[in-house]
Length: 348
Ligand code: ADP
Ligand code: MG
Image (cartoon, rainbow, N blue to C red; front, side, top):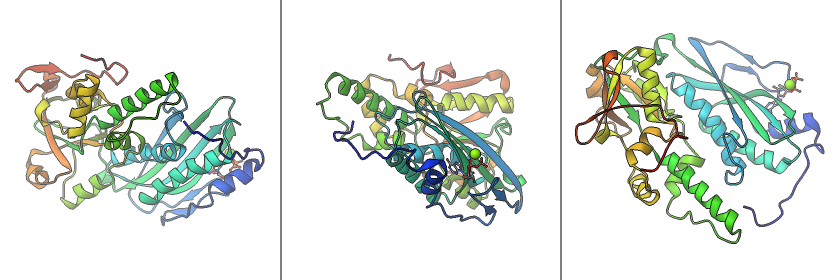
């Protein structure tokens, strides 16, 4: 929605190697395990101790992001954050990333500068080293694929499969805001299409927009848990929505779950905007995605250690597999949780 023609430097003018050098010049290596970063046929990592966790995620223009309202700096930041979130969900610490990008000649150097500035910020905040990647052209649009490498002691790594009956279900932060942020952006995009002179009406919605455009990965949670001497029995990050993630934990751990509607942490702004959009708050919290909070289970005996922490909310407990995963509503009814995903969200 830019009003003026911005400066455009074609990618060809730098050439592939010039472009890579240019984009990656402000990425220092911080971690002792990063022996060799960008510049050779391979990066080299030293295995210092424990085990290595690795994950990769692709982001495709038009599928995962819409550049009409996502600024490239936010996109770069978020692309790194969503990968780091997977590492924290293993109770591990991220150390290195690799970035593969397919980019069409529609994009200029200025756009990629912003994209890499967002990635640089996320790397700095999370003490992660960019150690390589690949750059290729594309006929249509932008595709990013990020790989993250992390480490943890074997005993600390937390899988989806460890939840046991009577464990408490805990979530960090609050839920539903990122989904509403996306609804707001989509609404403004539709208005803008109708009348390009309309100014976006986004004042007062900062928290929701920030949760959508500039999400945070919960590095603090593995650290807090370690400090409290709590090892989660299972953990997952909330990318697709609480309901779907609880079902993943139940499936992998072969257990059931009871989730209490009145315990789900929701920001007051989410209540307010749900009303505006005629959406049910619980539905948004259960099925809206992209909150990147951590969902985990702990042994009942660890409850005292976590209960005073304002970052953490107990929202339910693990039960027998035969019970299934259920939501206990405010009026005491039991409803099966379903993995709607967020495309299936409907007004009611
Ligand atoms: P090769 O031909 O051996 O694949 P490249 O010319 O593709 O090497 O890459 C040169 C160096 O730049 C390598 O270290 C590679 O990891 C790194 N690199 C390439 N593209 C990117 C990118 N988009 N982001 C970060 N590093 C990159
Ligand atoms: Mg290459």
